Length: 419
Image: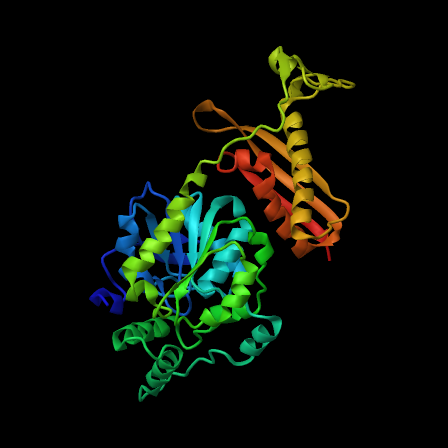
């Protein structure tokens, strides 16, 4: 094992991001123009687990970024304990802050659960997945672990709490080196006595593996990984995913066999990197002629649209003309409502009657240019609020209007479901 595997530093570039809850630490290696691989570690450890493999991943031409999950390693903790969806949402904020759009995700244990949920939330941005052990616990296992796993420790003046942490790491990983164990003790201490906060989030969360169908996935871990026992469950959940077991490797195969680990990860990522430029397959084409600009007329060549256009400031009583903002609002609202129906089918839920209201505002920006902003209000009184929020988040990844304007204009979404 290389020397830098035993502490928190290393040779990869390291930096911090400023985000709403605080600073996020990351380490980066490789070509920033290459396929982006975001690595999410297990808790209560840090991105240091992957330091020995970072150079090898970068040598394959990848833009490898290993983050410290908020609250772990050298990243600030959120103001209150987070759920898995909150960690997953934060992961996309981190990706945005790093300037990454479509990415490959590698998650280990807790990090795998967060990566799976991040993929469910923004499937349009995930090109492929690597799960380095994903704990697909049954409801009974989650309840049992929530009752007593990772009980924490109390700092003691004689330092006996250090022995408690050491004994726990040794119990989990009896064959790892003393140097690796020492690094983990530093990571445990950096989190604090309640190092099980992310574990509890995992135990309270049920991973929706059906939502990940179709995402190219690799199952990769050491044969001595503590989650190797779950292979039957995991391969049943991901029947199309190849399973690669590094013989003799533990949970820390990335530091034990960095080149072998990097070769397997890079082969998977590069095989699916071409998906970063998705092909466009036409479904239909609408053709509309407009003469006279905002005070003219719009006539469709492919449908029955034939409407007068009127400048809002010049609209008189009884004027039946419309304007581009109304037409855009109608198109966005109709498209979003249709895409929400697709989201319902994917999530196997029914929202009931849904109304989508689109408000499109024309305004000015710098240098005298014009821009628009959108507010979408989605109302479904028969649908529970939490369910509707999940549907709307998924709909934004499906709706072509949302995909077209993302990153270009402000879109505020309001969701009004039932109790």
